[in-house]
Amino acid sequence: MKVKILKREFIDKDHYLLWVERPKDYNYKPGQFTYIESTINNNKVRRFYSFASHPEEENLLFYIKRVPNGLMSNYLAEIPLGSTIEIGNPMGHFTLDRADTDRVIFIGAGTGIAPIRPLTIEAVKQNKKVIVVHQERYKHLLVFRDLFEQLPIIYIPILSKEQSEYHGHVQDYIDRLIYNDATYYICGSRQFVIEIANLLKSKGINKIVIEAF
Image 1 (cartoon, rainbow, N blue to C red):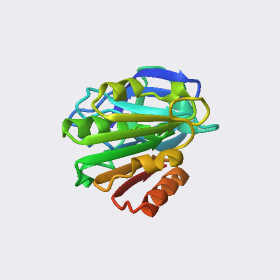
Image 2: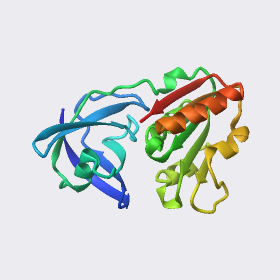
Image 3: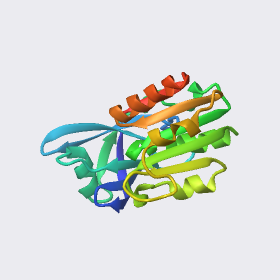
Image 4: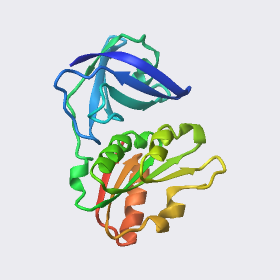
C-alpha cells in the first residue's frame, strides 16, 4: 500500500518521529507492527517498525532510530515530506488481548517504547491498572513522557546516563515491579528482552509477552 510521508520531528540527530498517511480501511491493533518498503540505490529495501500510534488516531506514527549505515532509517530521515513509501499489512501478537489480568506492566527500552504508547492508551480505555517503565540514556529521549504523565497510570522513567529520580537500569528496580496479578509486556533489543524476562521468571512471574528487535 502506497502512503505519503506527512510529518517528521527530530528528537535529536539520531531519533525521530515519523507520521505517514493511513490507508483507507487499514485496521491494526495496539502493539502491532508493519514493514516499510522503498527503493534505495536501485534496490528494494524493507524494514519492520512498530506502530507508535493508536488505531483511533488519524495517521500512522513510527518512532525511529537512525542506525549507522542503516539504509531505511537514514532514508526515511532525509527524503522530502510528501514522498511516497510502501507499507505492509499489520502483523504481530504483542497485543493487549493476551492479558487476562486487570493489571498490566509495560517495560520498554529505547525505541521499544513505540508499541507501548498505543498499548497504554488502550489499557487505560479498558480501565486496567497500568505501570509504564521506560529505560533510556537521556531525559530528552523520553519521547512520550508528556502523554504518560497525563494518563491515570504509574510512569517510571529510568535514565542510565543522567541523574534522575530513577537512575540506572530496569534491573535495579525490578523488585518494585513484582505483582502476581499482572501481565508483563517487554519490548526492546533481544538482549534486553531476554534479560528482563529471565529476571521476572526468577521472581516467579510467568505471564510475560515479549517483542524484540
